Each structure stands twice: as C-alpha cells, then as structure tokens.
Image 1 (cartoon, rainbow, N blue to C red):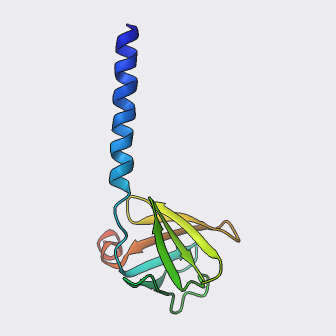
Image 2 (image 1 turned 120 degrees about the vertical axis):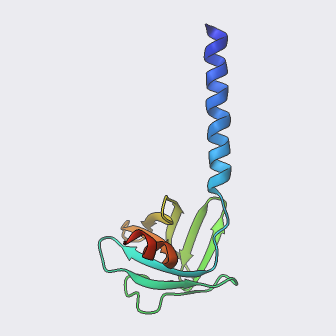
Length: 115
C-alpha cells in the first residue's frame, strides 16, 4: 500500500511538471484585446522587439512587454504595470499598483470566442 501511494505521488508530480512546461509557451507578438477590471476592451499591440503600444487603452499605460519564465510582464519603461499568467483564452493577472484584474486575449481568439 505504501509503494502504491509513492507511485501515485510521483505520477502526480511528473504530470504537474509536464503541464508547467507546456504552459510556458512563448508569447507571440501581435494584436491583443486588453480588459482591466470590468472596463471596456481595448487593443494593445505587442511587437517582436518587446515594445508595446496601448493606443487608446486609458487604463493601461504600457510601453514594453517581456516574458519571464511562464509569466508575461507589461511595464511602462520604469515600473511593472501588470504580471499575467497563461489562461485558457490568453493571459490573466493583476495590475501592480491597483491590484485590478486584467485579461489579455489574442484578437483572433476574441473573435472566435464571442460567437
């Protein structure tokens, strides 16, 4: 019985490690829909060189992005604005200053999910 418990524990840990590695897929540059708290969605563009353009997103003053391990960080050049993690539709997290919820969804997925 004790060996069986060790087997299941090891199997669970290995499964979790596999999911963690799979979740660390690279962030792709492109256009995303950004929603801060329950505000209206706006468009943010992530460039391949790490620049970010928030356009008309008044709730998100960001100019750079970077992937650090399995997280995506948005910043304004001097401080981190938000830290996001992979979610089923894109990325989800919280802003640093206000602790507001934040979601970032690729524009192509947003169109597919809304129908």
